[in-house]
Length: 337
Image (cartoon, one colour):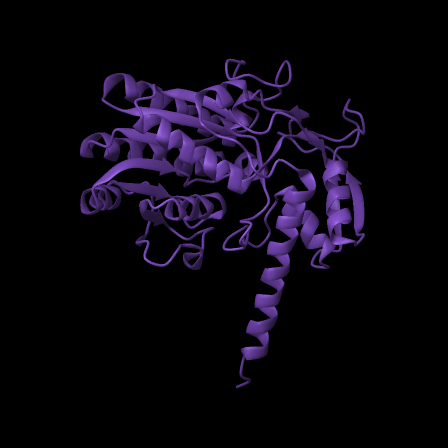
């Protein structure tokens, strides 16, 4: 039985591929490498470079590798970018997902795990936010993911398909073994930006909005370690293989940290200070987003291993320092013309 991972060379997808391989699974990857890196994929895992929305490509991979389940990560994820380019997000996220589902149905794949987002909730009426909370996304990014959730639900009703939707809260950190992490230039993840500031790659970090009605005036997020998130997907796959019914689950830890608390954690683990500027709120930003994880914990056999802000920050910092060492080595190896 082979698992197809779309977007498997990206930040979260590559961690998923490593987790599957570590568990003895057979894996194939489709990724266009727009934000992924082929060297993140373990040796021996076939990589098909191309658009995950290309039905001919995906159908060929499914048939060649006898794919029995799909874990779908491929897509665009930056909220401000989605406000500037909504049609691009509907193409990359919604249309491509539709095509992957069509390929799954055509080729008889019966298990599907979808990478969704807490952005589908918008500004929740209460926190922690449960899965049955109203879905009112504030950005095309959130809407594009919600549209895919709806397509997945309707497809499962019409065909022999079972799925788990995992609504991510804020993914952070890096592989504890430093095999993969965030490496895309200009990444906007808070932990990534903070460790870049701590390592001198940025002159400062901006806090967008300091006048929210929260204890320190900044937004609050539920940060989940990328490795724990990958293990939640493995648990979801085991659940579906065991005959579990289709479900939608929040994926977080169930408690939150403010932007200022995250900054202080990075300062703590790095032993360094860095400049922080206060900037106006950004359109589409959500004030407080914390997961109600009771359904997740009751449904899946999943116990997080890295539910600690300093641990998450330390892994993000270690990954960033590894990238800096690799860049320095590459520069030394360059032979002048």
